[in-house]
Length: 180
Length: 180
Image (cartoon, rainbow over all chains, first blue to last red):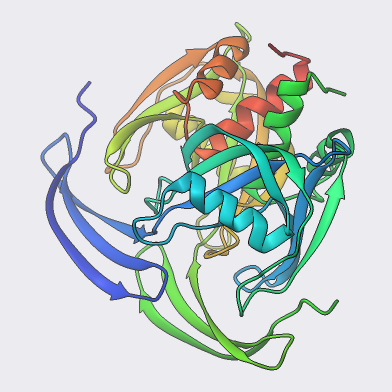
């Protein structure tokens, strides 16, 4: 079956500081037209960071879009032209103070392909060395370190409840053979 | 440490068909002001659906925001006032033709709390019965059934590469004790 939609027209309807919004008109496989609202995002990185005590490193922060504090794996947006791995090392150091002796790309995935083009580069960072946090001027963070077994339970209980963090914890537990 | 941001002003900058965009001005814990761009989303459901052959049920579709065909777990947006579980049963039937004899809420999580309020209700649907697909007028889908062990390998290889699908596969494998 033919599934592909053909782009007929693309209109930028909002240009923001971090994200933009466009409305695409597409021709469907049956010849009809439909519109698709697309959030344009610069892309992001996230890190499964494991410290020398074999704990996962998280950051706790207030998230205005959802109105609550969340415990998440370290993450950040790509700057224009920035290499994702360099971005990951930068964000890890800024948000947690840790520098990584070893870093490996685990996965590249789409966060919300139904309405956004955001691509996420997920890294595994190990051989961590302590340092000083350097958060952005508008970032207020607390570092929280949790053993993977406990983080897994927190995912299952809904205490870790954002997608990238759930993927990071479940993927690390899969690698380590940790299960219930 | 005080992490909470205080909302000073909220301005709707775009009202779309499915999503809206607002810009919030917040007072940071240090007294400074910052702006936050927030995509308002109606919320969504997704299903880990396991058929009578113990295979996971997926749908393949073209995703205009990312410009490619993806294999994803069944999912859909909440309609106004709709109960998430009813939405999940409706989407499962529309997208795959299956009706579920048993359905259970596994997780409620945020897909992208950095820029959106989208909340995802993830269900486990079992005791599936075959029926007829009833996709929306602008939806073109193919149903694909894959054993969980193989789906896990596809996640690790990047062949299943959207966040909700990765969470669904990893969470099911965690439950079933499936690992490498």
